[in-house]
Image: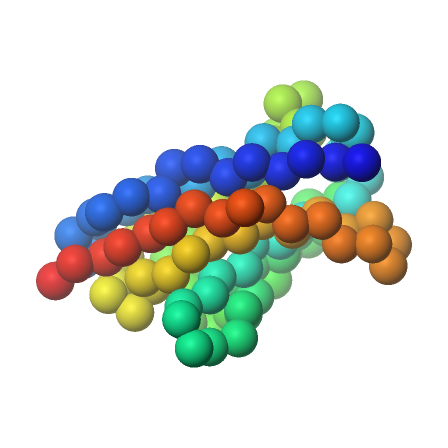
Length: 115
């Protein structure tokens, strides 16, 4: 079973940047699709970005051109590079690993973007 641990969240001013990391342990994630999701209180968790094992990516319209998802298979780690952050990006960010029908989630890391 894989364990996913997110890090890199914090408080940043609008227009700033953050990079989130998701370190996997217990099994390799090299051959699995991975994604970043976010959730704010009272709303459903939403997809931010997803990357396949082959490196194909897709993004939510709201983050296209500002966020970049990447993976380092040698480090068994997923990243989310976030630029030009906006207050509406404030949320708890979760990484997810897909093992067929089995989904594994991290515990989340909070990102707060202030004006």
